Length: 519
Image 1 (spheres, rainbow, N blue to C red):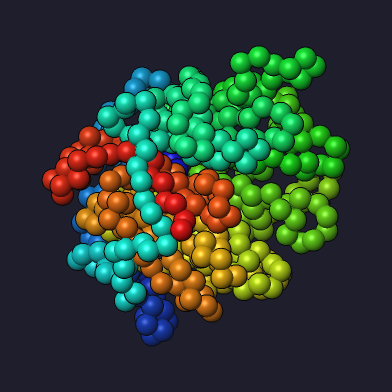
Image 2: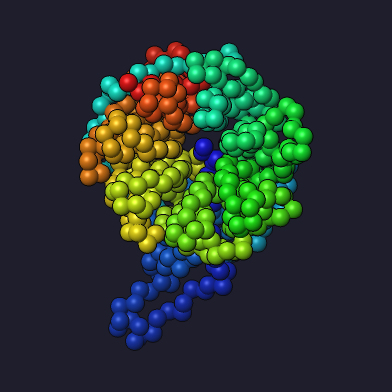
């Protein structure tokens, strides 16, 4: 899911109000070649940025974006967040009254400046002068073969809806059914022939679902799909009639949740649930003891929680939690389970605020028995919607002590999700990846299959049929029952303009799903 990394992006400037420009250096300082910051505004701008841009995230180097994007996209919004009201940028983007009220209550855009206007001008001048004139190009990489010999592709349309807006694709291996949700608040249940066997109408767009072996499915709905701080999300049992003695789950008022994971975190014999409340300006990562909303435990009081994975990382027989955080606080965090519902936090990967973290999963690429990280970054729904050469798919290897280092990277504009499976049955892990946030210059590359050639060398393939959608969601399973892993892609068009771009390219069919059957 994108979940719209709007707004935070650059500074989160902790303590900037207490900083004052140093006095003009004396003779001793000049003899040591200390820059005269009172006159060198560029040097002053860098010093200000270095001093105050690393408190909550990595320092954003000017080369991450081009001059125009810094000056006209990111920095004007940051000025408002620091209480600096510029003549050309003195109003918020139009907000609904309820959103405007929440933003005001959160104090996102303060009325009192947090720093002198001259200091802010120095920061802007630094980025304007140090940034490249255009986005930097991608590094050299293997070209994508525009054929997919291992798979056959076929589109599936549901509900006669002209604009695909698929928000959920998940397979229930207990019943061999596929659950498909869309932004029109509908959940379709498909059989093995991809025919609709059941339909559910829910209150808001669905984003996640799980399938307990002896209970009804549990569905998570987001509330507001677009950026929002309204707490309208919900976790509920997906059933029309509850079983005697089994009360249905119906947890409301969740902060724009996007994903959840279940497990017994405190060893009391009851299942708990971790919820990623992505939010927008505010959000939280939290868990409910026994799925009881009265027993809430907050792991991280910040927006941007994207995906949580429960696993025993340190092999002490207690379930730990790994979480991908986006929304400017770009990082992968481990929460080690200390017992009795207590956790110790360790940041294992950190990225700059415009990194665009979008998905993470675990897989053992080097077969050492320890989980490695497969990660995508490409979220581009923000104030810097330009091609970024650092967007793509990455593998980080585990040193067997939960320290991770990058071992493979493939540039991919707008990368949104990647999964690792042995698709070709040769004993190693291949990768299937999607690029939802791309500019549609090459829509057929919205899906890429990376065949593992050994020693973390991957050969990329795509298919012309992938040009028919924007692939937000992806699921893998043996849908046809022939013993190998097939792939289902779910398409989501956020605007009609996106479909229009494809129409101009000669694409006239827009299925909700693309089925890639593994042959």
